Image (cartoon, rainbow, N blue to C red):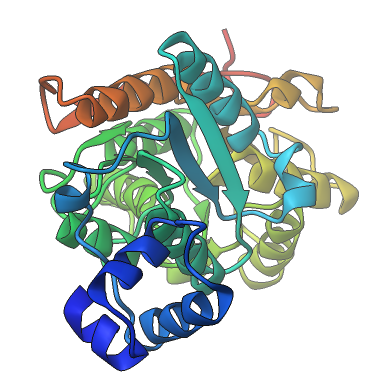
Length: 338
């Protein structure tokens, strides 16, 4: 990792000028600023924010970068209530919230770097982590305050709030097995996203405990969207016509899969049952109301936001990893309701 002194040498400016650029000081002339920022990007430089925090005044702002297109965010049944809950807790504790959107992991990394270099935020809330997550590695290395909603690695190395998604995936699968289903499919999110992988692990564990062979044709991956659910369901019906139940990583995916199946004349839940995750408000209003796992989004947001602000204000933080309870809300898309 290059030092600030090396950045100054390569930029042909003083170390003090580099520091002013990184702190967004308006006294730096534009030509020098652009030269420093170009070297910073070229060298992939990340300052040590733990040291900076000793001398930089707080902004009073928290950051959240969402891996969604801006026009899709308002309709997203997970992020919309999450943002509202974070806003509420932030305001109660005297902080603002800066929300940015990124379509790709590369653009998300660029946004994070800009937030950190300019000190626009005092800390970050992260979501949709992977076991090898460059964002988290950089934040840990720089000592920058952040809290993850989700799991990272073994779950003990970073401050996080999460559901037990392995247990939730197993619970849903066991319910469908108890209802008599034997060809249960799983539609996940993008490969490597921990929340999706954990729910898939619970699904596999339940099938194994029931003595059922694992048919890899029954596992399909989507992109957390209704369209992705339809594509996955079309593939399942073509490759495994005997499929009799579908667990989806979230409600949007489940709703798309359910819509495709009904359009093909499938009777729900008599021929195929459907379960989603998040217990979104629209679940009750579908033509066939959708059974879904309530993950308590508001409580996830409340605990993560309070934990982050405590960290920023150097208050004691109990427990590196907190687990929020989840439960299955049964509706007419599964058998034996009530």
